[in-house]
Length: 218
Image 1 (cartoon, rainbow, N blue to C red):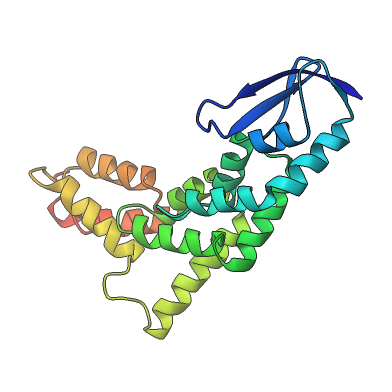
Image 2 (tube, rainbow, N blue to C red):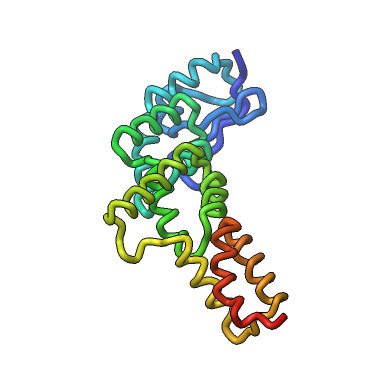
């Protein structure tokens, strides 16, 4: 049991309020739910009851909000969870929404990783892309699955002509970097480091750099 010490309206959504129990934020619920169940400061309540109130009344509301959140652009599961947590939804509601969105195909981290890799692959190497996707909360297995799909499409000839290829991407970056520069040892070393910093593996970076070694001034 705990005491509701405050119920305050949410700043970004006036239709929702934050409930504080024993002086600490506990959850967010709709004003309708708070009024309907006569919740008020000073009231003693079992936290499990608050969980039930949110779960019963807000699963569909939370799902609608999450669907609106992803309508502008694709989001990762981590993005959606962070959004729901920011609204004050409890884990039971959060998990319900995530499972529903997965079943509808609105959350698919492998597809997200594939789309991101295809776009970023024109200017970055896979190591950097993988690092960025991990930062977005996508599991390593999902990332590897995305890379596998890209590779399989390339091998079968199904990939678009403008799809990224690591070697071509590295060469394009190298060409841009070398414009107006002399291909001396120092410059080529700097080019190699630039490619490595962009996430290309050593072999790919070396191959792109070696194209300029004929003009190297020792």
